[in-house]
Image (cartoon, rainbow, N blue to C red; front, side, top):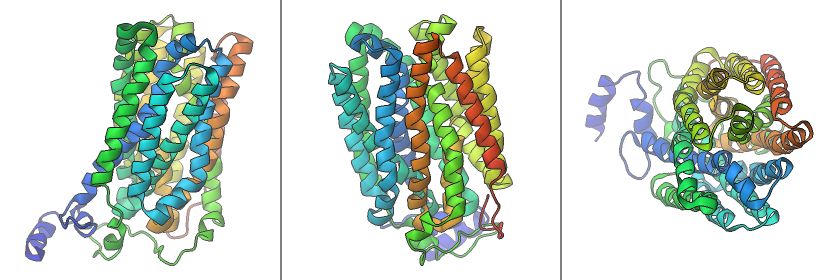
Length: 436
């Protein structure tokens, strides 16, 4: 085995092969980090793509079926994100303590069951309760997934890996965009319920797959690996205490910056289809097609921006992405032309899920692989606060003004504040240890 690895190590010198060999689990096979990355991408597909963004496409029919106004529709999104926020407070710590495997599988199982129950809801309160439970499960799974890349990849590959994982959300947009309108047309008034049944069943299947494929101990071997050419090593984290997460100003600063993303993007995503139908004259099928197009655009965006952040640093990449988001939300809120909506959707898609990937990588940069899940859970708490507030505020503004334009302009302003906050992030003294 060692002789075989020696030949391959020479052949692939300077590539990701070396760290993958040492980041082995009980399977004793090189490259297992990519299998874990595959499973993690599917977990994000379910935890965010179906559990959260699936609501965007289902919302118009669900709103009609349950007789909800825009404020209540926003409150359902807030309930989901409040559940996510509650788990963000402890999910990272659980993943650090128990290992990501069990937390991911359990979270996806809870989320899947809750989505099925959402499809059975017959009132606003019942739907809110199940959407909240969906958020609890998806929060546990997503935080555990995004926190484990520091255990499987070195610092100069971490943003790339996290970016691939967040593309799971993009795959969900691509799948759900055309599928949900078809189901709603096929099943009529009950179509939105069948959408939730399907989303829940898919989440349960992915939970089982993650239980079979994900392993916890990649980092233990990775830390013993011989550095390959050009590698950037993660700062030692073995002796860090739990309090190091909560006493770290760079972690707090990341959290404050993350609030802006949570508040702004969720307004855009939650009411994307609704705004296209009400302000753009789109049909449900047409809005679903543009939603899918945004998913295709975002498919490359996550790992593209993650890789860029590995090169130019987390700070500069965050500034660029926030500025793109600010311009996109303003265009989407102000335009009345189809070309304007298309440009806004594609521009957002190209940068849609980059910020979570960068944040996950930055947490590993600051505190190392052992505390990365706890740090990510902590900053996600800030992110969750922004997410929980955004939809309710936007829904009330829409009911008051008669459109989502003002809410989207508010999202644009908050994203601009995120760019300003990112520009003030401090670089660590040792740039080899941090991409900030």
